[in-house]
Amino acid sequence: MASSGTQAVFVAKDERIAAYGFGEGHPFGLDRHAAFHNELARAGLGGGIEFVPARTASREELLAFHTPRYVDFVAEACNAEGMFLDGGDTPAFPGLYEAAADVAGTTLALVDLIMGGGAGRAFTPIGGLHHAGRDHAAGFCVFNDCGIAAEILRARHGLKRIAYVDIDAHHGDGMYYAFAADPDIYIADIHEDGRALFPGTGHRNEIGTGAAEGTKLNIPLRPRMGDEKFLQVWEDVEVFIENAQPEFILFQCGADSIAGDPITHLEFTPAAHAHAARRLCALADKHCDGRILGMGGGGYNRDNLARGWTAVVQEFVRAN
Image (cartoon, rainbow, N blue to C red):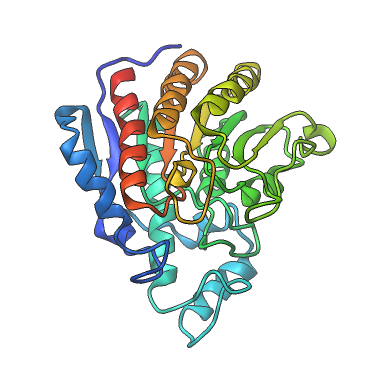
């Protein structure tokens, strides 16, 4: 099934999602949204994109993935002083609950636009918060919009097979462990070897459990592997997704895998992100009626995230 080729790519742009971050000087600061959008404007994609405002996820939508106890804990902690939502990476403060709900809601707004036929492809720069588990925060991630999107695609839109592809330098542990036993969520994750980098998971033998065994593909890479190795292992991802025949592709395209990131060491270039986006669009056209949602994920060098994410959007536009 091919996409119509006439639709714009929807891109989220709103100060409400820009507000998700942890202050000046923090790797996940408040300037990431602007860094991306400034570069996207320079790319001159014009009518090929259409901007979409934020919306807030309801409590019920958050509960599609997260436990009630955890959602309540976040709300309470963000109204207290000096609390962390996890062991020390993710501080709580007033306004964080609302910003995190806006990130999740914006991802869902794009899902709904795609499923409603308004666009085949969409992208949100502040999303892809793949470390949050069903009952906990982790690694700067409060609500896991990737997992919420997967659950909403099934509950609201009636899809069965969903593919989640992650090229962030950090393993998407919140996604893997939430769906490890779920045979209808196919996960392919290329990341830096967890023995050298948070969260220390994502080993090759983590392929799913029980009835879901074989529906998960983890590809850990040693530091400084670069694009050549990425392109080599990417072929395994394509075969995996081809065999899955998904109805929707969620693409977490963290830019912290690009050379020069201050906390990771894979040393890809934006060409790796462009290649992944281009090939996933082809697979989406074949299996998903063109339906693919890109989510920015990590990335702590502002030039890298700006160029990497813009490369993804460019490929989405070209694929239309």
